[in-house]
Amino acid sequence: MMKLRPAWLRQPKVPVLPADITTAAATRAPSPSPASPRPRHWRRWAVLALLVALAVAATLAWRARPVVAETLVLQPQALQRTLQFSARVLTPARVEVGSTLTGRVARVPVQEGERVAAGAALVLLEDEELQAALRQARATLRQAEARADSQRAVAQPGADAALQQAEATRSTAERELSRTRELVAQGFLSPARLDEAQRALAVAGAQRDAARAQARANRADGPEPAGIEAQRLAAAAAVQAASARLAQATLRAPAPASVIARQVEPGQIVQPGRVLMTLALAGPTEFVAQVDERFLGQLRVGQRAMVLADAYPLQPFRAVLARLAPGVDAARGAVEVVFTPDGAAPGFLREDMTLSVEAITGERARALVLPLRALRPGPAEGQARVLVLHEGRAQERPVTLGLRTLDQAEVTAGLAAGDTLLLDPLLAPGARVRAAR
Image 1 (spheres, one colour):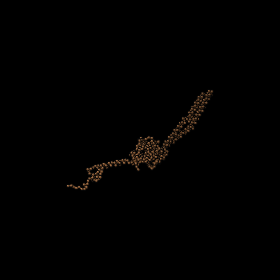
Image 2 (spheres, rainbow, N blue to C red):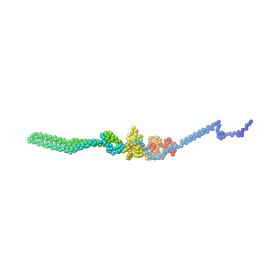
Image 3 (tube, helix red, strand yellow):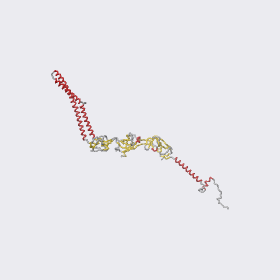
């Protein structure tokens, strides 16, 4: 028995060409049968290859893009290097005043902080006994001077007159002896008279010798005037000593000064060696600072500085570096630096006052200045390397450095005004760069 098939089943089958495989597959059910997994595997590898190609292209594009970097266009500008440190006010010298005598204080006419002139009385001791000693010495001197005057006016002329008289007496005795000898020889006188005449001549000769010695002693170069002059000089020295001791009873300022400390009061008994008063001598005010020896090469005599007292922050004033200590304090590793005011010192300055000093250790009116963070190590001291923007790429250039501060440096060779400096320390030479806006 034969079964009949539908008409659509009886139509002849048309062969499917290979070029129409995709079309035939599209006419089939949406999902392929498990028996044919090959088309799905092929599509997976194709998608993966496409993703890899896109990733490589993106990486190449990312690497080829310019790096945005911070830049600086160099232009001439002023540059100043300063050094800051603390200092203290110091007067030229301090003087401790004390007594050279033992005595009681009668009066102290000055107070602490007072300015005194040279020779001003600071401390007065009781001096009645010293004044009496001076009067006695002066009386002794007047007595010695009177004796010297008497010797010159009376003793010396009297000795000369006595010598003349003695010589005349001896001459008379000689003539008398000669006459007596003639009379004795003629028998008019006895030999006894001759002996008397000889004795008289001998006495007259002795008197003449004594008068001659006395005259020599009273001459200007003789021992008598010398003894009297020695007594006068001793009396004069005694007057000077008494005057000096009396002067020592008043303690005076050796020079214009300020009284820093007063350590004595009226009525106290003072002795030699005890400090009664401390003075700060007037003179050029100085500011002394201890600066780390690392900065010694930056300091020069004559450099300018601005000074500010901590107690008067709104009143700065100028100073000048006056001198540098010849040695370094090994214990602190510091060098002493001394400044003086440029002009009159402010009136508010006090001994040991704390000051802040900013010294100008280097200055340029026009210089090419770049920040230190743009520098890269160079082959030698004073040299470095930098990156500049040239035709869209980072170009490395060697530079020579001059004045340096804490955050800037002067370029003396290797760059010119208008060059664009790259500040990014991570950039590599040759990289494509775009300046940040």
